[in-house]
Length: 346
Image 1 (tube, rainbow, N blue to C red):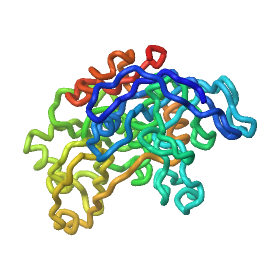
Image 2: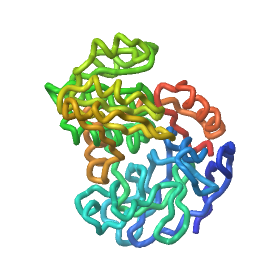
Image 3: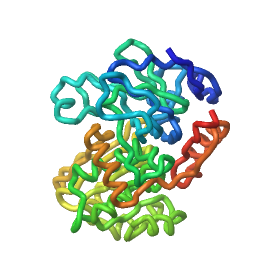
Image 4: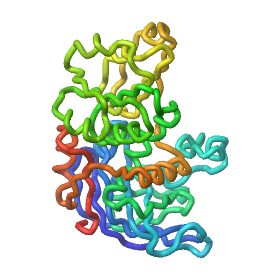
């Protein structure tokens, strides 16, 4: 076991604080990573505050991890010391079910092992990226292309693939009209990716406060959802609406913006249930769907795509002592657009 500096939530809703954790020894197929940067995802806050249900404490959040390989096990073939790598939202799965065999480890039928707030195959709690080192099986480590800086690449491991996966699955491309609902950590990546995939992109945001940013990042249009006229003007407009917000919505209102056979896909996860009139999907053969992260193969595809198109996250780099303030700022929508921790400060 190796003792590693980390930042952890000691209990639900408690401020995060500096601590140490134990990392397992490097096994035959393991990779030891010196973490350089870790993104702060809204889901870190949901879990540290038990917004999604009972959690495991102490909790070291962080599933947007970028770093350098420091050591490899004797059976490792994909990576060498010095390689630039990343780790996303999961660190293992059963590897045997039909979904895992299809490259959909995120939907492992036995449940994938989360990077933090999970339990590993050794029965020990998993600890995430708000730390200086992590040991991960090579099969769940991603290669970060040389064209991407590690700091702006870190958020791609969650925010990037969480938007890329549904955009790909619902065939985003030229001739498609796509709306990105919400202009935050996930939403700004959705705009960049949908634009790079060739779609006509509209941002739907509460206000026009971030309009200039949205247009600069690749949106063709930008509307405020606080204006009722928006819903009249855009009725029946979109092939796909990707919702990145984690607040409850009037789904019937948003479903009215879809074309026949359009899809409203949720990647943001509110803490409470939402209501729906089923006629909103029946009339127009519309789809209300959800999407998780991507599998390992798709996540690597996303990283390569981002490198090819010069896409990284828009970040604000912070020190570890700023994490608790950053959480409050995320809740207040006061970040453009992803906080990233310099883990050298832990």
